[in-house]
Length: 332
Length: 247
Image (tube, rainbow over all chains, first blue to last red; front, side):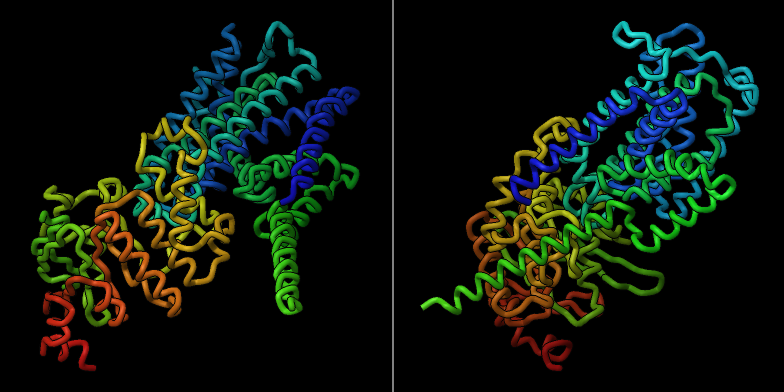
């Protein structure tokens, strides 16, 4: 990759960030709601991308952690506590539960692990629905306040969108740094070859549990933003289908790629909206599009880009070799 | 001289099959012990028992006089016992340099210092030195999965040395490696053995490789120790010729 390519990437990054800040300024309430939802779901999908994409541990419980975070925020903020306190509690709670949920992963893998986490997902849903004293059951919790951030009220849609976007930026930076740390390398080792990892002194048990705990904690972070976004929560959004949606976001975007969740969440949240003009057919079109994509590229959208770049690199390298060879041959 | 590795009466059964049937031996510091025997005689199983990848049915393993039976492979590795694998075991999506950094990073500091420390765990220089030592310079930033079989074998061996191990168990390092590279590999191993006083146990089918590299050779057959001695003694042993070399 040339210096030129690096500048282009930085320029592209700045352009995207600027667009995310400026363009929504004249969006209506619904548009801002959808974009905020995209930011929130991206955070949850980033957590799952860490657990599944980097560390290779299948989880069908990410939606449950979003639920735990959302209920924590709803219960605490409707009691008059600040959202930041709820955020702290949600992170600690989801980290601890995620850690415990990681234990089965030390014994079972792949689809067996998927079933264990699926059972947890169901259990969490039953708690949200049946424990009326805590969650108000099927009636849900309404009147969830939006926070004041650094003295600014976020009651209106635009400030709240900026609040979500800012949170996404912070989580992204933390994640970028995490996957570049030795931990990130150890997570990849866990995914690619746990036996070899063990023989290199990598404590695979501790890293597996960490991958679950951190991924789940990010689900909790997304939940604490989700509650003030909708301002009303009931158990329904946090059933198994949310976990499946999040799994799909990670896979469609590109599992194990840093920007995968951003794209995946965009497709899962925005595409159905754009397809609304087709009326009754939009879900069908959406499903077909996802199927076609995964047949064409099982590694998701970023997998296509990755393949293209790898091909170009190989071509450039073989061209260089050919030039070098012809110079050798023509040398006097 | 102190024994780096002491194996006492190690047994491993799988159901009714006695894969390793009461093996005892010592390896002294700085020694290169060859371990040979026909396919299926229990060499790799013995390795896995020593390294904690399999729990031995019976017996004891000591490293530097300390009992290590029952330790996990990761704990044993951090005590300075490293290994290579018979089949390719590199991390294909990571670059050559990243593979080597990964191989060394758990040998220093703790979980927290690894999280908050530098992203290369301060090992870039050590990794590059190892890359130079194994003549992989032009491949440092390539994904390990894109290397040739022989190059991956070299990388696999290099990874085993990243943590500065006292004892390295090599499982068929020469398998599938071409002649030029094989010469390189042998020379590199001999150099590390000389300079770092590293101790090796090598499983290998390539007799030329074993006989020229090893100071002592141990022969296994059907889970038992058949012979032990210098390469010349082993080559002349009638029981060994009968069981193995004679074919």
